[in-house]
Image 1 (cartoon, rainbow, N blue to C red):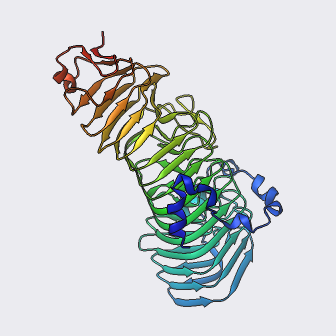
Image 2 (image 1 turned 135 degrees about the vertical axis):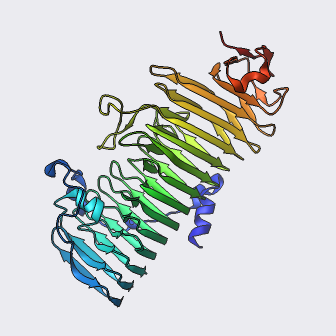
Image 3 (image 1 turned 180 degrees about the horizontal axis):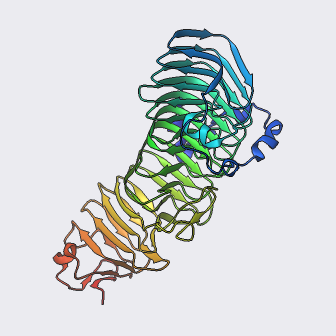
Length: 461
């Protein structure tokens, strides 16, 4: 059975009990790395460190402006701030049936994040690599593959990744580098070890037919700083969202099945000033959150658009979306507001739902705003409400093929309905209070209308 057929089956509820998704944690002795995985990402030892490369990047096996083919080899190093392979200056180096093993710590974590020091494979400065049928193992906190620089392109297929220790991303792109991954399987046991990751300047990740499993706090399946494109991916983040996205980044998911165990299913935020232009889309997918209070989608200190097409959002909390004046802390285990960032601003989120059946509420905190549009035969059972302080706003629209079943009274700034008779609203006795002064509500002419089910569509006082 192909991996694609496994994922397609996993999206059918009746088949879940018969589907087994395997990753490297199924055959590695995890007990040997307990101490490694107890280490936390600590940027305070260097005060954050300078945002430029301090020293030349070191590698045990170095390729500069050269071509090479590595086949059926085992390559390793046990040294701090040292890669196993350094491939740079326009090199073309391909690996087939190669085991790469990395031991040794990162002395300056920001240098590892932005420039890939200590990564098992550091591929940079316009170089190209094809990596197939291989195993990449890192300990003590080291990325698997780091791709850096405009023109740097890495193709990875049929390869397993295993890591222990903090900030051990399996695949990591920055400086406009690009990684294409297909049929990869990854497990990370440490803190802040997202599997498919970008960093600043932007990195670009394209992944298909793959499996990700992380267990550490802050270790998401995806971390977007740049663009993420994923098709046919299963991801389980035990103590993190399925996605972190920092700033005006882009994440495109099709036929993915993501399970999240901390914070939210996806978290889109801005760690500095509020950014405009973040985007997220799910098509033919499923997103599941496991714990109480976890929404499917969370937005803070960002202006974003989201598209949900033929997708399931399954939550224990009953909350589909939260927009807030908040952001994720550097510990990546809780949200914080103006007490930690005085420049933080409300989130502004526009969401389009198509061909989906959703159940749950949308919640705006502390002056945030949500535009929620039901299109293309979608159904929504749920309501909107405000939390926190300040005036938050909702704009809700329903096309004539979709239906909305209310679960409480709601107050909206704007309400539009393509069905002039509101026959697609199931009020169940609850009311919709709209702003009679809003331009989008002029069609209502400040009137009170009886909705199917006995509730009222009425102007708010």
